[in-house]
Length: 258
Image (cartoon, rainbow, N blue to C red; front, top):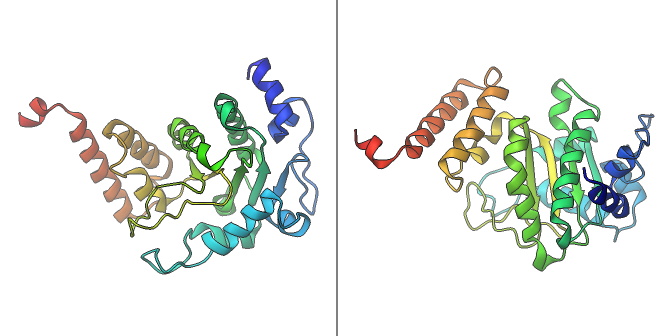
C-alpha cells in the first residue's frame, strides 16, 4: 500500500491500518476483536447500540438474509449460509469510514481484509466454510453506492482465484435472485462488502450469463481447481458444461462455423 493510502486507511479507522502499523491480533477466549474495529456477530449484537452501523447490519442479516422470503422462489433462508454462520458465530464485522471519493483506497483496504480473513480462525476444515467477514461503509451515500459495485467487480476475479467470494450490498443493488428475477436479495440498509470461502453451491453465481465469456470461463476454472475433488458429480458435470459453453462463445463466428 502506498504511504498516502496507508495514511487514509489509518484515518478511516480500518483494522488493517492498525495491523499494518504493527499492532498485534488478539486471539483470546471469549473471542475479542482482531483489532479495536473488528467484531464477531455476537459482540455486535451484545455490545453495539441499536443505531450503530454494525448493529443495523447484523440485524438485517439475521432478519432478512437469515430468514425465508415470499419472493425468493424457493424454501429456506434468503442466504442459506447466514443462519448456520450466526449459530457458529463465525461472522466478523468491521466498519470503515472511507467514502465515495476513496475508491482506490477501498480497493486496497479490501485486499488487506482478504488477507486478514484468511488468517482468522477457523482457518481449515469444515468449520472454515462458515467463516465470513462483512465490511460496512456508512459514509458511502445511497446515491454513491455504485462505488461498492465497482470495487466488487474489479476484485471478484482476484477473490475467486483465491477460492473466495466477494459480495456487494446496498439499497440500490439491482442483482436479481436466481429463481425470481424481480427479487433483489442483495439490498441492505448500509453499503457493505462481504467475504467468505467459495462453496459448491456457488456455481450458479459464477456461471451467470451477465459475465462476458472470458470472465465466466475464468471463474469456472477457479471453481473446478479449488473444489473439483469435493463437489458432487452433478455440479462437476454442470461446471464442465458451463466451461465448454463459455469457451465456445469466446471463439469467433468464423471458428464456430468451421
